[in-house]
Image 1 (tube, rainbow, N blue to C red):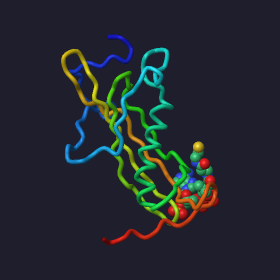
Image 2 (image 1 turned 90 degrees about the horizontal axis):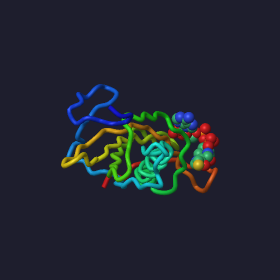
Image 3 (image 1 turned 90 degrees about the vertical axis):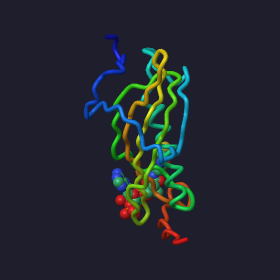
Length: 149
Ligand SMILES: CC(C)(COP(=O)(O)OP(=O)(O)OC[C@H]1O[C@@H](n2cnc3c(N)ncnc32)[C@H](O)[C@@H]1OP(=O)(O)O)[C@@H](O)C(=O)NCCC(=O)NCCS
C-alpha cells in the first residue's frame, strides 16, 4: 500500500477512527482543500489545518465573548489522518470551558473524501484552542455573563 493510502475496509482504531459525526450537529465551518494547500507529497500542509481550526474556533469564541478575541494557546492538537486536495473539510466546534477572560473551544474535524465511485467520512483531527476576550490587541477583558434569553 502507498504511503498515506487509506482502504475503505480498514478497521477503525482509537488513533485513526472513521466516524460519521452526529447528523443533527451543524459544522461551524466547511472548507474545500486546494492544490496550494498541499505539501510536495500531495497531502495537505498541517499549518493549513491549524489555521482553519483557529478560524472555526474563533467564530464560536467571538460569539460567546460578544466581541473580539485573541488566540492565546493551542492546548491540544491531534492529527489523526492525512487530508488530500479536494477533500471537503468540516469543523465541529463546542465551547469546552468559559473562564474569567478565557474561552476554550474544542474542535473536531471530519473530511468527506471521494474514493473511486464512493465517498467516505474521515475523522482527521481533534483540537482545543484557548481564546481570550480582548478590548483591543494586547488588552484583555472579562467574558460577559451569558444572556438568558
Ligand atoms: C491575550 C492576551 C491579551 C492575554 O493577556 P495576559 O496578561 O497574558 O493574560 P493572562 O495570563 O491573565 O491569561 C488570560 C486568560 O488566558 C488563560 N491562559 C493564558 N495562557 C493559557 C494557556 N497556555 N493555556 C490555557 N489558558 C491560558 C489564563 O488562564 C486566563 O484565563 P482566565 O482569565 O479565564 O482565568 C495576551 O497574552 C496577548 O495579547 N497575546 C497575543 C495574542 C495574539 O496575538 N494571538 C494571535 C497570535 S498570531
